[in-house]
Image (cartoon, rainbow, N blue to C red; front, side):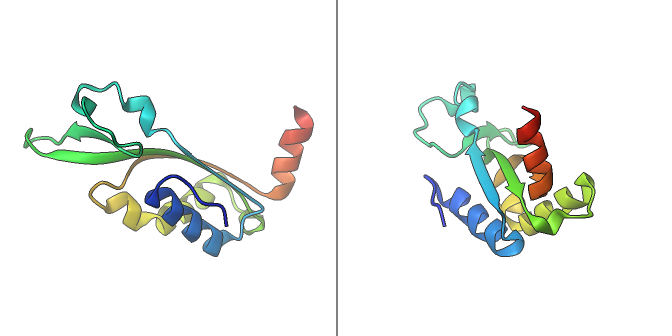
Length: 121
């Protein structure tokens, strides 16, 4: 199993691999794209960015921005919304945790769909 730079990515990789036995799995941590936010000033975190929670204003919440691309036979016969619900359900604890996933972009395909996409390019 491939590893990553962060424990959150490793946890996602482990869960997705166990649940879907993917032919392909790519995880992109896009949190650095938010490092320019004012609340991130002085932070050395590579995995999360911070924002002030509302309505309390003084509390901070850690947020993670991820893209996860999964290619698996288990998606055969399922439409995108059902596939995405499966992944969201699998990662519900990571989504709900303080400092967990804030934004998750999914691309879920079967191996046949992935091959067709590659051929079309």
